[in-house]
Every structure is written in C-alpha cells, then in structure tokens.
Amino acid sequence: MLSEYPATKRPCSEAGNPGGDPADTACALWLNNEYTVAEAGRLPELQVHLSLVERLRQVTAVRKGCVVLILALIWQAYAMLLENELMFPTFSSALFALYDALVQGELLRAVGTSLRVLAAAYAVGVVAAGLLTVLALTSRFGSDLLETCTGMFNLLPAIALLPLALLWFGLGYPSIMFVIVHSVTWPMTLNIYSGFTGVSNTLRMVGRNYALSPPAFLFKILIPAALPQILTGLKVGWAFSWRTLIASELVFGVSSGSGGIGWFIYEKKNQLDIPFVFAGLITIIAIGLLVENLIFNVLEAKTIRKWGMQS
Amino acid sequence: MHTSASPEISPFLEVRNLTLQYTTPQYLVTATWNVGFQVSSFDRLILLGPSGCGKSTILKAIGGFIKPAGGEIRLQGKLVTKPGSDRGMVFQEFDQLLPWKTALENIVFAVTSARRIPRRQALEEAREWLHKVNLTAFADAYPHELSGGMKQRAAIARCLATNSPLILMDEPFASLDALSRSAMQEELLRLWEENRRTLIFVTHSIDEALILGTRIILFSPHPGQVRAEFTSVRRNVGQSLRGRELRERIEYLLFQDRVDYAI
Ligand SMILES: Nc1ncnc2c1ncn2[C@@H]1O[C@H](COP(=O)(O)OP(=O)(O)O)[C@@H](O)[C@H]1O
Ligand SMILES: [Mg+2]
Image 1 (cartoon, chains in turn orange, yellow):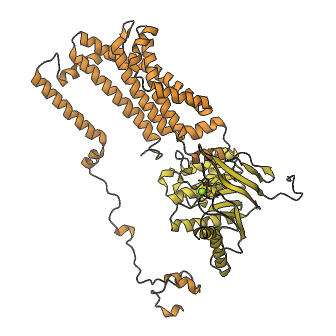
Image 2 (image 1 turned 90 degrees about the vertical axis):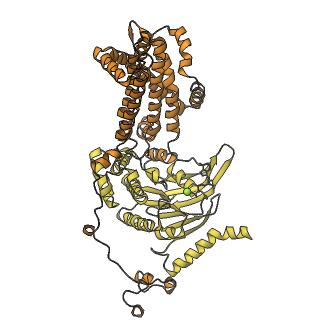
Image 3 (image 1 turned 180 degrees about the horizontal axis):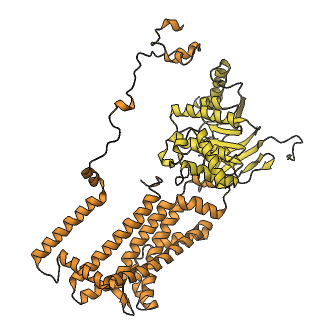
C-alpha cells in the first residue's frame, strides 16, 4: 500500500499507523514538503542588551525623579516671582531650613518621637487585627463580631475620636495612641480577614490532604496564601496611621516638651518660621515614600511578586 | 481487617450506598444517589460521566473532604471520616501547587508533612520524582513560571511522592491542550507501570477513559448513579474492534437519556 505514494508524499495518518485500519485513513493528509529550520547560530541574537539611556528610561524611579525635579523648579520660579517669604517661601529656602533643622537635631528628634509612637500603636493595631481575625475564623460569633465592627468603625474617621480621646486620656501621647490604634485596626482587620476567607478551596484541600495540625495549617497554608491581602492591610494601616499621627499631633502633640513632627510644624507656624513648616512637610512626604518604597515594595518584590501572586 | 457484613477479605476500597448532598443557602442539592462500587488493589478505575453528575463530589468524599449524607466508604476495611495522606489527591485546577514554593519545595513540603521524614531525605526523593516527570530543569521555578502541563506534572509528582497507596485524580488533564493531554496520559501510564498504586481517575472524556483505565464506572447524569461497569480487555483498546464496540456502547449509555428527553 505504501508504494502507491512517493516517499515524501504519504498520508500522515498512515505513516503514524502502519498497517492501520482502513477507517482510520478515511481523511488522509498528504505531506507535501518538509523544511529544515534555522539553527541557533544562524538566528538573530535572541537577547540584545539595551543601551544605558534606554535602560535608565525603563527605571520608574528615574522617570519619577525627573517629575519631582520639574515640580521643584516650578515651585522655585513661582516663589521667586511672588517674593513673599512669609506666605510662600522658595524651594531653596525650604531646603536650607530642612538642612538647619536636621543639623540642629530638632527635626530628627521630632521624627524619632513620632515614629516611636507610631510603631507602638501600629504593633497594637496589628495584634488586635490578628486576634480578631483568628476569633472570626474559629467561631460564627467571632465572624459576626468582626464584620459588624469593621463595618461600623471603618466609617468613623480617627480624627472624629480626638475630642473623646482628649476627655478620656487628656493631652499627650496616650490620646494619640488611642486614635492611631483605631485608625490601624479596622482596615487591617478587614483586609486580613478577607484574605483568609478568600483562600481558594483547592489550596485548603491540599493542606487538609496532609492532615496538618490547625497551627501548621494556619502558618503553612492560610497565611502565605493570604499574604497579598495581608500586605495590603499592612500598607493601608501604615498610610492611615501616618496621616492620623500627624493630624493628631497638630492638635495636641506635646508631652513633657518633646513633640513629634506634627507638633514641630505647628510650632514653627506659630513662630512664623514658614520655611521650617515646609521643611516639616517635605520630611513627612520623604518618610512616607521611604517606608512605602524601601519596606513595602521590597517586601512585596521578595514575596508575592516573586511568587506571581500579584502582577 | 474484616467488614462486619462479609466474612471474606474486604476489598481495597468499598463504596456502599453512597449519597452525597450539598447544602446551599436555598437548596439541598443531591449530587449522587445510592452509588456503590468496589476497587481492588492496583486497579486503574475510571469514574466516567457527564459534567455535573457528581464525579468530583464522589472523589472528594473518598478523599474525606465531604461527609456522606448516606452510605459509607471503607478503605481497607476502615471507615473514611476525614482527609489523610493515605489518599493522595490531584485536582483539576492549576492552582493546586502552593504558589509560594518552588516545584521542588512543593514536593518536599508534601513529603515532610505527609510522611514526617527528615528534610534531607525528602529533598533527595523530591529530586528523584522531578526527574521522573521530566521537570529537573524546573526544580527551582515557581508555579507561575510553569506551563499548565508542567504544573500538572509537578502536582502528580507531589502526589506520588507522598507514597499514598490510593491516588485520586480529578480530571487533571482537562484544561490541557490536546497534544499535552495525550503526552500526559502516556506519562501517567509509564509512571504507574514503574510504581504501581491504586488509581481512581475522574474524567468526562471517553477516549481518556479507554486509554487510561483498566476498569470504568459509568455514571448517569445528575444526580449521579452507577449506570454501567466496564472492564477493558487490553491497553489501546480504543483502536481495536472490541474497543470500538465498547466506545459505541458507552456513548449509547451516556447519551441515551438525552435522546429520550429529546423525544
Ligand atoms: N459546593 C457546591 N455547592 C452546591 N452544589 C454543588 C457544589 N459542588 C457541586 N455541586 C453540585 O453537585 C453536582 C455535582 O457536581 P460535581 O461533583 O462537581 O460534578 P462533576 O465533577 O461530575 O462535573 C452538580 O450539580 C453541582 O451543581
Ligand atoms: Mg468535576
């Protein structure tokens, strides 16, 4: 039967099915031509290095840095035209003020005070969110409690609690702690909890297949699987708490003479040292950027982005 | 280990009068009704049936993930009540590998959790299994860097590495393209020849059932009931005349109800 066709023009199905059933060749195809493909050495280079300029343009930080530079130049030009150092100082005088404040240590002390309070309140908030979530995962009452509380308190801006905090804890850092804990706990709880409940049923069954103990199941399956939302929760919590901290310090941030960065700004305004006010604002932005880029972005890059759990 | 009912040695796996139900907020859904079959050691048993007839549900019940509403499942005479590593599961979904672990670490995790052996030994065995499924080059790749077929191969390696005597596979090749699918079927048969276990394999493809199975249980549409039982005579039976008859018979049994409905 094969002799009916030239060697290269043979029905494919027959070639793969010698002596096959006639029904299998009912829709035979002819092999008309075969081609050889180019070998690796004769193909164009598969990976070519981009030039330095090209590569720099790929770096977001470089591009964004340029935007900041342009905005700073506009600020400088406008302030120089305005010539009103009291209402709107130039960018350069804000930078000099920043330098002065840093060298004198005044600003660093204020930042230190702020960050210490923040860290304590943040830690309390994280622990509270974790406990609430565990409670919610283990009991129906717990999940009802969590959903009700987050639903209500998420709507309550932290600043709205300031008068009450003042009444309960007086002027000073206990009040600020109270307000920040409130601002961190609810969004963080919401994110962590929705992360846990969103873990796919397949992954849960994989964990149960190995008969893991409840703590092992929590730490080896649930937490890593929910990590994208947990990190989002931590990030949102940080953003909320940082803003709340500054705002509440502006209102009553002083205790035994050492105020935070919000208090620094408030004081400088009272002394009409306006370049220092701007220096304080720049510091707030700088710290915010530093934490987001250095801590959270690195954390994300090393975990969920590396694992393909977030695009 | 004898069942109280029968004096002879109990079969490897026995499913008796199994009724499985889901409770949804509005309904009580009966997925399978009064299903019974037996599995002997080293069978490659195929559960074949139309989509939605409750094949996955049965498999999950055997895995211990779903409690029966009626009837029972006995593995080597022992009542199945909860999941355990004596039954390894491969799912249809590509997301069954832990995305935060590399292919190698996924297997190591399974081996250390299921068999509680030291990490050094687990690593060694995991490498061997990766080699057996041709994934050595991808040992350190994370699941999202693997193709669909590679993920399923890693999942199969992970399942076999736990040394479970019973392997449960729920349409593991259903979302693969036709070429990888038939390659994977060959590979599964080869692995099974090298390392024999009892396999229960769910599919809705008659071809796949005929290629992979030594026995086939055919289910009626929803709610699933056993419609027929087949024992194939030899491999590649789909090509032989006997195979063609078998296929036609299966097709008739599968689609008969639908024709009746149309009339
Ligand atoms: N989690 C669930 N809740 C409610 N009903 C379900 C659930 N899972 C499956 N079912 C129903 O049970 C029946 C059998 O489903 P399944 O076992 O997944 O079928 P198969 O795997 O054979 O396609 C279907 O009718 C489906 O709608
Ligand atoms: Mg299914």
